[in-house]
Image (tube, rainbow, N blue to C red; front, top):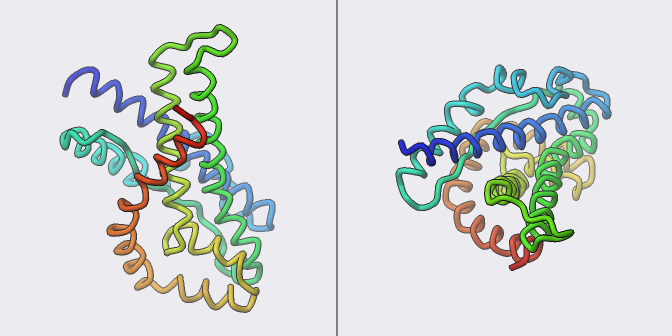
Length: 218
C-alpha cells in the first residue's frame, strides 16, 4: 500500500471513530435522560468502550471496506457500525422516548455534517484572510461526506437502523408499540439488510451531491 493511501486511511479511520462514537454517545445520553441507564458506560467520547462492545464493526469492517474501496479505484471510503444497549421493556413502556433515543444518533451525525460543511464553505474562500492547508480541507471534506452518509443511512426506516424506531414519532403510541414489536422480529433485520443493499447505493450519491450544493456550495 502506498504511504499516501495509508495516511488517507488513517484520516478516514480517526474521523469514522469520532463520528460513530459521537453517534452512539448521543443515543446513550438521550436514553439516560429518558430514564434508561442501561448504556451509561457509552455516554463518552472515549472510543474504547464502543470498540470493546463492537470490535468487528468498529475495527475490522471499516478497514476491510477501506481496503476494498481503495483497491477498486472508485473512490476510497470507510463504513462500519457500533451499537448502544437499551432496555426493551423501557422502550415498550415509553415508545416516544425510545424513538427520540433512536433519532439522537442520526441528529448527531447531521450536526457534524453541518459543522464540517459550513467550515468547508467559509474556509475554502479564505474568509478572514485565513487560508487553510489542503490537509485541513481534506479532513473537513471527510467529516462532511461521512456524516451525511451516516445521517441518511441511519434514518432509513428499516431495522436494524435507527430510522425503524425513529419513524414511530409519526405514529400513535399504540401503533408505535405494535410497529416496534414487529421490527424486533429477526426476519425483519434480514429484509432490512436486503433493502439497504439494493436501495441505499442508489440514493446515497444524489443526496450527497444535493447536500454538498446546499451546504458547501461550489
